[in-house]
Image (tube, rainbow, N blue to C red; front, side):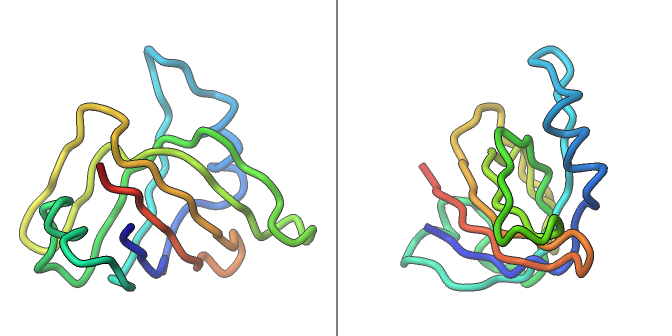
Length: 117
């Protein structure tokens, strides 16, 4: 598993639209900006982004739940469709890179864990 520190991302309204205004034919994605956190050996290599320091994840949201009851902090579950990073972009054509995140929509920060297949 690879972990990232989220330093930017969608607001509450964009998260809601990504969850409820979404179809298989026309998925609505959201983007998260991140820096590298920690990872198990080889996980970044599997993502083909091991030499970068900044990332932008384009994600499809499967579920959202309240993290602490504040209405601003969320547990998010979904998959990554592509990653922009220093020096390139990697596009995934399937839902193999599942992620979970805890994200605060006011401060726009949090953490993301990516399960790499």
